[in-house]
Picture 1: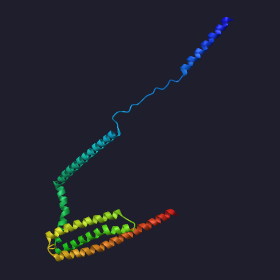
Picture 2: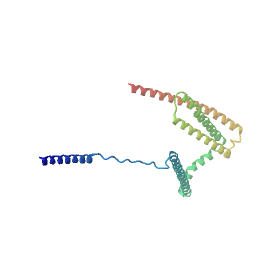
Picture 3: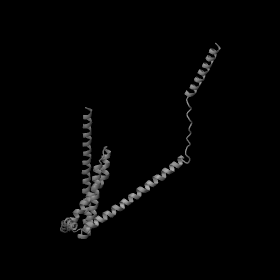
Picture 4: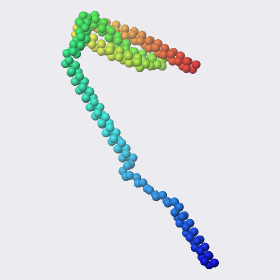
Amino acid sequence: MKLALLSFVMLSSFAVALEATSAQEEAPTPAPVTTTAEPEGTSDSEMLDDAADTTKEVADKVQETTKEAIDFANKKSEEIARQIDESPQAKEYSAGILQPIYAMAEYLSFSWFHWLAFTFMVSGVVSFALQLVLAKLAVLAHGGFSIAQLLTDAQGLIISLVGLFLTTQAATENSAFTSSPAAVLSASAVGIVAGFLFYLWGQSEELQALRGRKAEARVERAKKKS
């Protein structure tokens, strides 16, 4: 009887020890605490300074590259122009283009031709200058604007100005037009009047085109609604 009781006590002690050991094995291991130290010397001001330096370096590099490209293009164009100037075939083609123009200029080298040319150039300058300013303001007042018409008028003004300069130079060298104040004043007066009339005509055409575009827009909106 004592032996049985002693065996029971020993078995109970062994079971309790076994349960304690298994509980220790199943207990979760605490996760290690890690601390991240911030790197030294990375403040906002230093980062901004670095970014500014990088931007300056990139801008300098782009400027240097652009300058090199422009220099290369200039040298290449000069080299090509020199080769064309030295080419006999290019000289022949150039003479073929200029010869009829020279012949016509010699045939028309009289005062009345330069008077007409001067009058047309003055009328063009007046007409396109007024269309670039007054006509475009009138179109804007009616709620419209056309980039294509603006560029066309600017081109016409430039061509008229260049033509006026060249006509005056040619008249000075080849005729007595510029030496006659009456001829110069009369050509200027006629050119100014003609240019003003052409301006009125051009402005009415632009306003009419604007009304047409508005009518087309109303028709398109009506179609979409229906």
